[in-house]
Length: 268
Image 1 (tube, rainbow, N blue to C red):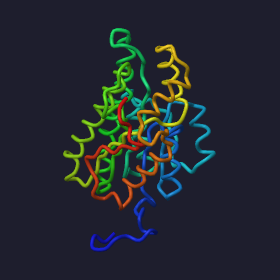
Image 2: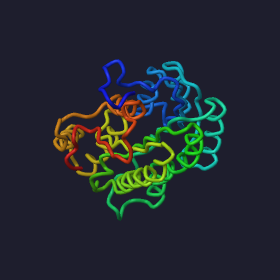
Image 3: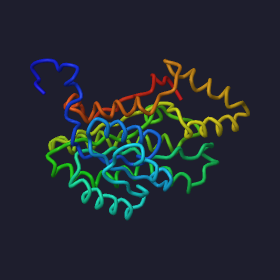
Image 4: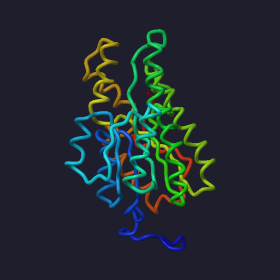
């Protein structure tokens, strides 16, 4: 893409066709939306997930190069995942570090340390484990991208969701550090900060918080929406569109950024 003239509309998302991409937790939710979007734009996509049911259903809906059961918080699972990715894709151009869990809801004195560790292990350590295996492959490809999922909770403190917020702040720090480290190798590293994403995960979060406060789920939902400037939840496909942009030629000079896709969450 020439830097001396603007791209026409049909050139805007060039560079995706043929890219070899791994999407963690790619069989459902945001991960599936990303995998589907990239696949339809011509990328060769591999996914991992922990749900046998979701992994079985995903290839019936979209074209996938590899489907692997793996828990990103387990070193051995991640090692096996990347061996399969290397075999099936022949290398890697982009890693989408999407896997995460909501973690526990409760006061700091109520949270079980095991639940804290599980949340940090999946939401933050899992991204490190995947990045350390992906980087040699992306370097060998001559450069590429890492896109990691943080959250609006990685920008705002989130009372009663401390493990999740701490992990997502950590993702922002990991992203900025890797962008500096890997930039000289032509690897762009960015974080996406989704807000309230439509789907079963936020439904459970709202239900848990509503129970804690003794209000209805409907009232709790409205309380959440009042903190969003656009007064609406975000679709997983809104996030997928941002990932496609970052991986395309249009995102060639974007790195080290934490990009909100959240309708402007004002506070949590």
